[in-house]
Length: 335
Length: 293
Image 1 (cartoon, one colour):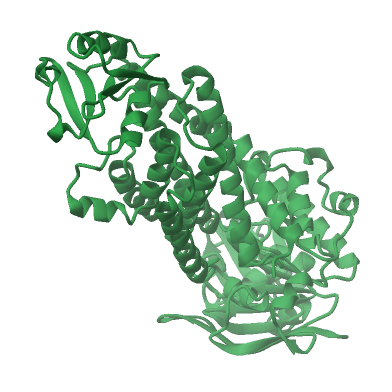
Image 2 (spheres, one colour):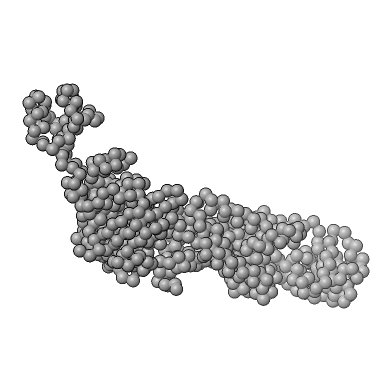
């Protein structure tokens, strides 16, 4: 059984240790902000050479408009999905030739210009207005950057700290008290969860004042997937650090865990076009599910039910990592 | 006198190395028990088995007649040889943290006074001097008002003044009728503090008793030292006269006769000093090598 007085004392001590370490705290706050500012600057230009028009059932559609140069036509089968793309400024106009109607995004300058071209040939089509904020690269990459920052904080903040404690005999001193391994480990895990969620919330809220991030879904759902993702990464950190006493080894193991996630979990680019083997491998990485789930909530307005696949996988990962980490955990006082 | 700890046939092996080799002893309540020996003698391994930190390969440790178990951690205090404290916590916060681990604790003001912590109570653990750090670690060892306190080489690395201050703290603890188990390789420390000593080497017990008993048992002579340039060479040929580092060491059971001989040979007594054997000498005699080898 957990003695909550002991649990809370270790939880509090670890939080004090983190928040008083100004360099670490500063870096944890500054890193994601610098990444977001840098990426928003680098990708601030439009960069698209042509206008994009969505066409419902493109194969069955016939119109001279479809011959227009410098316009790219994209086929959609689902009106709802296509409308979301129009609202997000991913396409500039949506046309249903069979029903003789089209949708235009009121807030998008490109939409206005493409409509002028479209109306030359189709003056009698039903005009339907829609509106929505443009989804920028910074909106798309936001869950990836925050997820990556959480990953580093969780893996190194738990794994490295436990190994350091073990190496310099802090764990040995704690073992000589009535504090149980369960109380110590739970306090470390929950302290890191609190720190990560607190810092991520501060970064998100702070950056939102600057960037006015796109958000179609619910903040509660985003918070839930963030907690599940963070906890799965924290338990992975515990598992990696469960026995080692060497900071060099643990540094290597943590890098081995974090680099594949940084590259293959969809932080920087979508894995849609990636080889199947890469997608299968990425499915075993907790960050993949955190980023994918959060991105669907933010850009598509998905609910927890819609991303139940990612939620379930993260919960399974938490159970597996926590069970193995707790089973293998050693105060490691034997020489 | 009540027996607090009894060690029976204790053995601890690490692969091919036998760190503790079938040792037996007991510790009486209120005593300061010294576990002495050179580095690598097996002192720390023996004390950590008594503390319940590591498991014995063979043998048992009894605490008030019962085999040690997890509940013992509420009743003992431990100061390890090498321990870091959590960074960025102050001394006061560290005391609060450890207080939360125990059911019964000593009021902080008593600990602060006993271990002399008041002047650096709000200082970050990272900024403590060696002596201050050891005093804080001692306070943590005493925080649960333990029956028995284990101190593993508590003064190693301290300057002479800090060592003497720490000895006074240990005497204060003894005055409170606590049992103290102390490992050290400083023989002067053991002679100052211990009621009962056990000398180990290569994992085995090589002597046991009070410091006075052991010295009386193994020595009936004293050492006289003189600068070598004052002593004629022919005198140094005698079997109990040895020249070390420009000094002549004379081992004798009759100080008066030896000094009379020196005066008869017109040897100057300037720089002469007489030393009684100590535990260092005893160890050298028993093992043939120095304690700090």
